[in-house]
Length: 266
Ligand SMILES: NC(=O)c1ccc[n+]([C@@H]2O[C@H](COP(=O)([O-])OP(=O)(O)OC[C@H]3O[C@@H](n4cnc5c(N)ncnc54)[C@H](OP(=O)(O)O)[C@@H]3O)[C@@H](O)[C@H]2O)c1
Image (cartoon, rainbow, N blue to C red; front, side):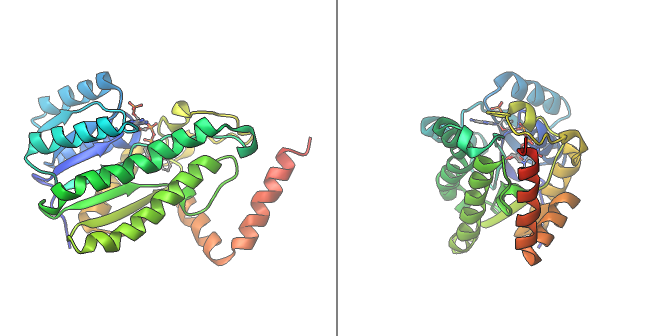
């Protein structure tokens, strides 16, 4: 199956920066009608102005996705504006780095709110519109940390594992409505995620600039949507890590634990 994005009515979350911003640009340029959401209204307006000048049909609906009322308003405005919805891309996300024992319940809950509860409830709210959509799909952007837990990325890993589990379960449930449920598992990407972290206390610093280019990640995500791929792992780091973890999980555990011991030896 090949999904034609021309005229497709899409909602993309986390469209104010990074992967989501590039996804919105590429989807709009491919002829999709795109609703952009995130909290930063100014950044969304700037992107809408740019894409509208290019002739795209785009609209900005600022919202904090951790609020139930704002999620409901968002879906009402999008479906009203486009007279329906074909594709929901749950891309918004937030990270936190540092050991779990030194963290707080507030940060854990906020990470779960953005990365798990928001996409979960958006899927539930969007389902009635998607059921009436053309070639409808939900695409969830998780992370390689959602398939292999990482030390110091504990809260983030837990939230992305939850998202992966929900996505897999819903794939079969939504099959009865002919709504496809797709998962993308990116590796390191050179976005602004590290600058938006809720806490940044990990001893092992990760150089995000070494990661995949944001535009390449977005292109691959749209390709997965077009080809209706159930699960797509992006980036050689993610592919190698998940391959090693599948066949030698205890070896990966050992190497990671050894690294943590060394980092904390002093
Ligand atoms: N960068 C990586 O290495 C990497 C690797 C694997 C997976 N990912 C995943 O890729 C997705 C995109 O991240 P990115 O790398 O592009 O990071 P980013 O540049 O920090 O983008 C995150 C987006 O999420 C939005 N967001 C955060 N909290 C929100 C809230 N409460 N309500 C509404 N929107 C909210 C942000 O917008 P506002 O701040 O304007 O609200 C922003 O648009 C995330 O799900 C991330 O977990 C990233």
